[in-house]
Image (tube, rainbow, N blue to C red; front, side, top):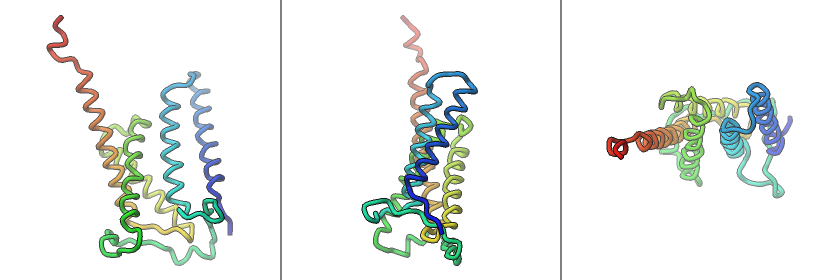
Length: 187
């Protein structure tokens, strides 16, 4: 069995983000630019989501409880493949779980199209958010104290879709505002 502390995960993600930034800076020979700001936004999204998804919300001895891997406890796999069980399986905190899963991914829908130019359509951006959620659900299978749930995948993807809609609505409004009208040309 081994444990992954939150600070260890945070350190690895930070090192990866810094490595990508340094490689980008060496490749382009540019100084601090909007690309680094976008990378920082992307990084913040990942770190916050990983915190809530992989690490229990309760604290142990005043610290964030570690993520535990034990190959002898992986089986049986804790997975729910029946959609919308949250509609019938009510438990303490189910509303927070449903709302939290949606709102946790709204920033993904907003930030990822800003960060990645190839996410230039609603469908691509929602698919990226859903793919990220699928990655999370599949990786949770390796940790006996986590569980994978189709409802989480659906709710996370819905949250990403809401964020993407916000992003494209704001982008469209900004574009309309930037286009000069006939009265602006007369002077």
